[in-house]
Length: 205
Ligand SMILES: [Zn+2]
Image (cartoon, rainbow, N blue to C red; front, side, top):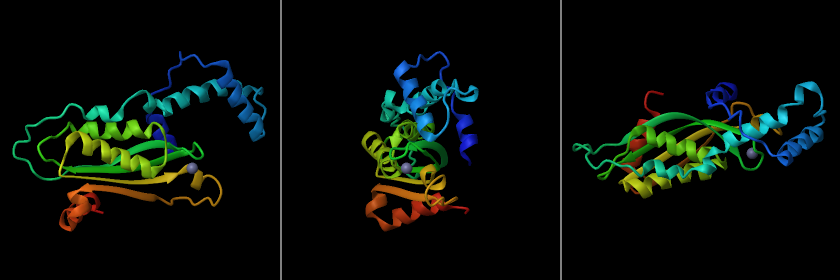
């Protein structure tokens, strides 16, 4: 999945959003610093667009992502197996370069007596991803939110992502993915449970 198609998936930034003058000026300065002329025609509206885009990229600051897990269901119908949402595409930005991080996450938990609508797991991920991040913290935050709210027997979050600051600059390591994982509860303590969740995540590959 490349950055452009992911970008197009995002809701359009609010055209009506007022951008303060000092924010526009900062972006004009950045364009100048990068070596271009912010007054040339093609760049004239860019500062405003960039500012609005960044509000969109960072919309996760306006919400509590864990709040998506506040509505849980206790009726699990005797289901006591792993629930897995696999390969959820996401986009974030690294806090070191504000460069795009694009990747996919697999989120699994073993319910004790509470479950949550499956789409909520993706919402938690997208909420934390819509902030300036490092991949390790994003992984840990998603796992911890599920652990705290669902009180399951185990949580596993595995994220594989490409970092724009690596692929687009410096060593230019295209196609190199970074993998992070956070296991809690039985997936951390019990080797059999851990093996089971990992084989589900990797199943059919
Ligand atoms: Zn970076």
